[in-house]
Image (tube, rainbow, N blue to C red; front, side):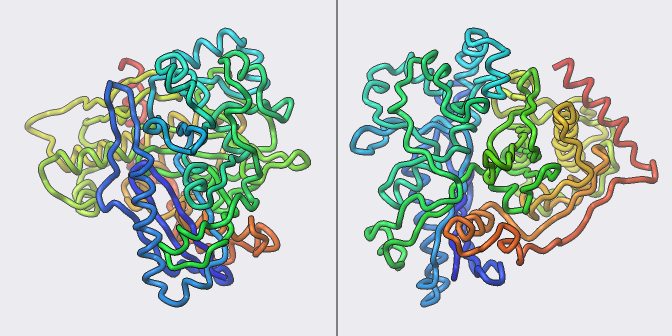
Length: 492
């Protein structure tokens, strides 16, 4: 059997098809070639048109099926990974009512903070394991207050992946994991939080039916199947947010295991079996994809909005018209510490790990006679790695203290400079694997439809590509550079 995985990001939609038996990726495609537009009508806002998601999904899947030719008939299940925490609203005819308010939109911070105070810190942390903060529930509260006519027309709300599944299958449902990432879930009562729903004045009818991440969540519509040249009825058998899915793609399923990504945003995601939380809600706890009452699996997530987006911004605006590889080559010619140049990467909205503060991006120590683009490229990558270290120190307070971080060979982890800086400043080894979100979603589909008899069987084709160990010689004094960077951050 072949397995199709779809990864809906904020920059692009990627599709991959793997051979279920070997785990080998046969074809892959992503659209658009540049980046999907993020609409920012006001500072701190971030929205995307759902039709743009669908258009790029159709293009990426169609390219994969065209490349497969007759073998495409062997596709037997579909999995979906999606950008977390977004809000999609539809009317009773399943028409989308407004652009999706996506993960990095910070307009709802005040709504979450007020809910945290009103419901009480003890209740939120013991039952929700988080502050409502700037998550999906708070975004819906913003819509309720600021767009009341539209709110009254809402039949169901959903997360971005639920919307994609709806377009594929015509069936609307969500997952328990998805509700927890929207901060709708009561971990103590193992149900939707009635207290939060009552506080915001949300009817329970707004939430779709809930299903496990690994389960049949609908079957491919005939009209959609014909666009891809596939038979109708193929099951959508897995759905998860991008970070739990990234952990799955790296076989991070057991307590103590840790995964990381560094695309538009940066994430460290650790699995635990304990209901622990950060009292300041700077890192967040959700249900992991393989959670059950008998075998609890929770994901502790550190999310940094401004990471790879900084590298992307430099590429577009430095005036050099370079590829990322060329930028990395230039950065490698500069010594660690970037000759005193420091960069804060926080320019993509309010940062949870900074207490929902928008510190903004900042370049410090610039000397016109010393520094050039190579210094800036290196300082940016070091600043991104230092932000990971800052967040990892917070995670350690919840019991997540990794010695190894697993990551896919993609995005910022393609850069040797970034890997070496991150490994040395955190004291962890970084293990790279031949996987990404779309192939992870494909493996998830195989688990969800029962093709794989166990989780372990799903990872036969996962191959370690290399290891980056922390610098031990002392020649590269990353701790000193980090402390200087941290001082800059505190003063920002």
